[in-house]
Length: 460
Image 1 (cartoon, one colour):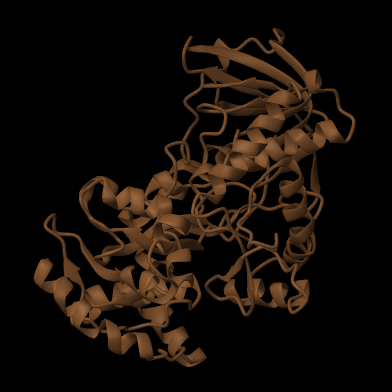
Image 2: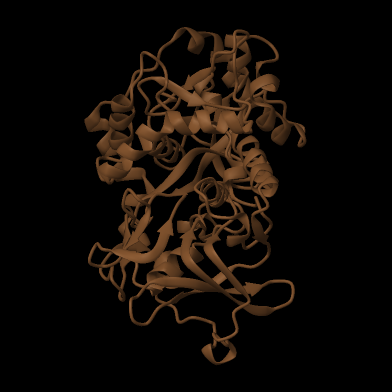
């Protein structure tokens, strides 16, 4: 592998002076259809049951949704209520913690709010996020431009009213997080340092070095605990409860992983914030996701009549670690490419503009490895391409990686790979479940007829 690295080093000076061209819309469409995993029909099938019957989903998703529940109703006494609250929030990540905090801000007493989480409070994908959050809060930017970028990135399959709410609320949320104590990157004069993300027409990525999610979760966890909000750890919800007359969601059955007991939680409203399906390893891909990302919330919601959408769309982050074996699939943040790192094949040549939308970059990497056979085969047999991280130091000066990409530096350096001096190997990794339970702009979960299910909300 050292000899292969020499080829990357030989072409670096030349590549520093070159601007790789963007792909045309026609090239983009061809690239996606031939190489993106979402376009593999053999990986999906229509759902056979429920309000979204006929919806095309990955086999791994259909297997869960169509399965019989493991719970035996005879073992559960619904007349014995263990917890009685106004709001039950299922999930302890960024969305769940934010929902709890805002419920308390809105006037609901802390002792009437409960977070029930599968693992520890804060064990979630939020904590693993690195690169940053996009918000159009600069004079040369606007929510309209942000809206266009998001819609385009989603191939205009997005729900426009939700995208509008996202882009209009984003600057306010950045300010709210900062007021709570999140330490975003700033220059010497106190201005936000914002960089360009993939598929964005403006610099609007707000980061905390490359541990943005960890910093946000630190603050949200502290705020939740300081407010005295109830937290039930190691207690995943395994079924939702409904009113047989109105169909309203009225609580959940929880399973205590430590005592192996069922608990009944009754609530006036339930917020589902359980995250995605990364740990289902769709089509065998590695994942950036934490161990609790198993899509159980979506399955529970479907069983009470929730409508699903866009579950055929999965985001594969272009740059998951491909070597060494111990960190395969872990995130190598897009911020590396925002700061100048290029994607390079076995010949030391660029093959894609590094800040194309993620689906385009991921498809180009797969094509390079399996279509053109210009990937690098690791000692464990996995394929990948080089992410030329030393370019970051060439462009921005020595110390940049340790200053702004300390998590990436630490992840590789512990295995004897110094990303300030040598490129790292990457390959696409399963990152986001783009679809899920359908909601409206008030976060109310919709049923098969497109009507809100009473007392049921979803976030994240």
